[in-house]
Figure 1 (tube, rainbow, N blue to C red):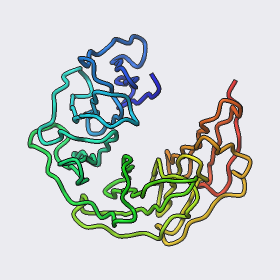
Figure 2: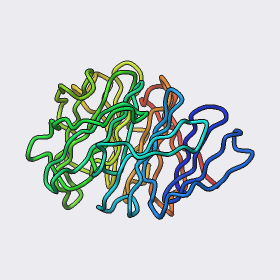
Figure 3: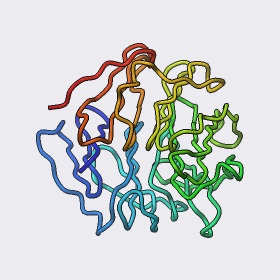
Figure 4: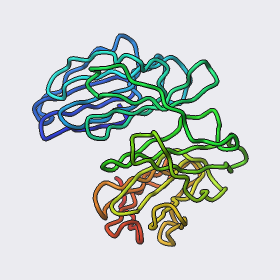
Amino acid sequence: MNSVIFADAADGWAYGPGLWATHDGGVRWHRVHTHGRSVTSMATGNGRVIAVFARCPAGQSCPAQVYSSPASSDGWRAVAGTAGADASVVMSGQTGYATASHESTRQVLLAGPANGARPWQARPLPCRPPERGSGVLPLATAGTILALGCGGEPGVGNQIKRLYLSDDGGRTWRRLARLPFPGYLGTVSLGSARTIVASGGRSDVYISWDGGQTWHTSPSLRRAERGDGVAAALITGNDGFVLQASIYDKHIWLTRDDGHHWTPVTVR
């Protein structure tokens, strides 16, 4: 297992590639049978949990589909209209979102009720040709705002990449300033007000405090080992963390001031 997520004080899951669940706050865990599928992403909200079930591990291309369950039980059911989903899923209110590859060449945004009451519908993505690659497009939500990352084909530590924001469920998009060329786009996270962070393989952590008009790096993160990649996330109004994909530098970097300053904490 490489990820843990909780919906509330009682209901949680450990996943990647298998799936384990607890419904008593972690006192007892049990294995959820996925019939040989890998769980690559999960999201929770409003008493519901959704997940991507794939026939191969995350990072590989293979058939996948979104499944949904009440958070308090293990009643997993496939969501109609989500065949071809990529490796990530998010929720905003009662709505779930995932990117997907249709007809082998066309990437779309899938959106629909997280409980699977109706089939999810495909909506076109805003990525322009130079921003379209073969990787999974990262998604993030904060309230009613949906963020999408577009990245072109990576090479020699560089990639054309750009973020888009939508406040109407992906029907229309606002194009943000282009991210710096160095590094690959892997994760996107939204914080309070207008703070956005983007990170990935061989990349700095890029931060915007003005809703994506300008991008910055934090001097306090210059010592972070980014050779194998970093993953940054904002978890509350001002708090966030950076994980390093390094076997040598065993640090987690924490911020409590909206990403302006970061402090390393040693993992032993």
